[in-house]
Length: 399
Image (tube, rainbow, N blue to C red; front, side):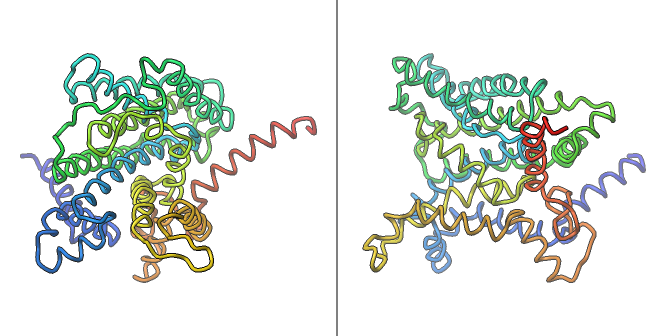
């Protein structure tokens, strides 16, 4: 083995050594180890009781189902962040990819007898094609104009599903396609966790590559990227295709588990389109880690609130009856407290606690600057871009 290869291996092993990782990555590994160990921990005498208590359901079996559903939603949130968080082109109708993947896979399985594994692949491919169809307008339009296209597209698809209810099942959906791994709580949990980790590693690596740097540069200064001779439209289409494929994978796999079904309310409702944006922004827009954490939070908090039967005095309503209302209030408060996302706030807090003022520990999860370092977070950059578009739209006559 050459010296160069040996050096690369040493660098790789050094990078993967947990003892040499920054604090935030050590915490992430502990969280991952906990997720993997949940089915084992519940069988332990004392620890198991604690784990059952923190599960988002009345039993650990149903809790695994709910966590599995949250992992699928976290995959969906990461797919949104891959295109909107990095390029700054906000997608208001990302449920389109979730629905195309889910419906395509269900129809191939139920209508043509294909195995779930093959039908999921079909769902991913068609969702990627949908990414092309949505991304191509990026060649001519951008900003709020492109966002309007992403908003209208799922509305058209929803109306198509309703008008052609004999094919798509209307508002009732298509029923229940075959499950990938049966009805087992543990097997379905590890299926969701495995897909979640695969998507996370893929996007984490991509956003740290040259491609990820270009996508980030498009969000920060698209004109500068064009001046450098790079095709911004090509990279935007790539981001939409990648995002569509991953969103389609999440939807396709979701409907082949006991926790999901191919219905408009589960795959492409207005609430889902809003929740995925909230998840990414709350966790940390422009950071794959933040989108994953935000997705888990948005999916699981309502489940926790549904378990609380405490009746609020004066109002006379229980917490579970007002779960969605309270969830919206909590989310609104958190968005105001952590405008750059919980992840960036946590990194800045950890840096102050450890007394570090720079270096890798002080950087945002995907290599960008945190607001405390004088940088502008992706939410502010996106708002500034959209403000410029609106100024050009309504202030053009003044020039």
